[in-house]
Length: 363
Ligand SMILES: Cc1ncc(COP(=O)(O)O)c(C=O)c1O
Image (cartoon, rainbow, N blue to C red):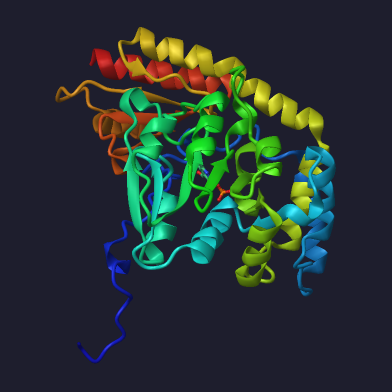
């Protein structure tokens, strides 16, 4: 042992989280379709509320998120005592890992599921077991095949990032029925608002009657990514544990006020969702028309697979687009080196990305 501070075992093996690119070298205002943000921005009411909160910079926020809690309870018809809050839903995942994972335990997630779960699990010296996703779809069976006596949490991003695919609710129920009661099932509904498939449900009612289901939500995808507000709906016993380790002042006044204002701006939320559900099929169809394989998405992005031919690859397409001021996400770090994830943008953005890719594939 050397005489300098040593991180715990496994910490330095954790791969860095790779965010969507925000800059295109040499281009002032690129079109950003790389991070699944709301192309309409934030609700003007939320922006105003956030700005007004600047008057209260010197005081601590309400650590129990009382006003936001009431607003969510009203909007979603939930029991106030069953809510927990996080600096983004990321922090709720992190808190769950802290509460449930000991060294040598494991979590299960889809093979191409959201990258943050593994980071938090590994920081607890836990293992990550990946359930196979043939054709980018995750089944109950695939998850259950990974369960062993050390499994403590299943993270199900539904829709899944970066594939955009969903697990039908009948399948979620089946998964829950067959999962041992000691395993927490996290239903991560970060993109739930954008789903228009009929057999989908965010799972609040299922969670209400279960001892081991946590539903998580975020304000990030509908315009408040920078405000960092996420929350979870969990059984009382899980809330009791989470509240012991949650950072006492993890949400800011500005973030909470913005979230409350945005929840009340129904028109803005409806327009944001409508933009995605209108342009998602168009974008998928156009990309398909260019000869790319496009996976069925229910989120605010689509995933497209590029040929494995020099001059046509996903990595080259990403660079081509960036050089022309369009940022998309190459998802090599999700073990999908041949795919790009493209967030749904404004009409002009969607048309530009298709045109630039048409040129790329013809070049
Ligand atoms: C599936 C999924 N869940 C959760 C999150 C985390 O969102 P936030 O921490 O901004 O609430 C993301 C963000 O990209 C995501 O893709």
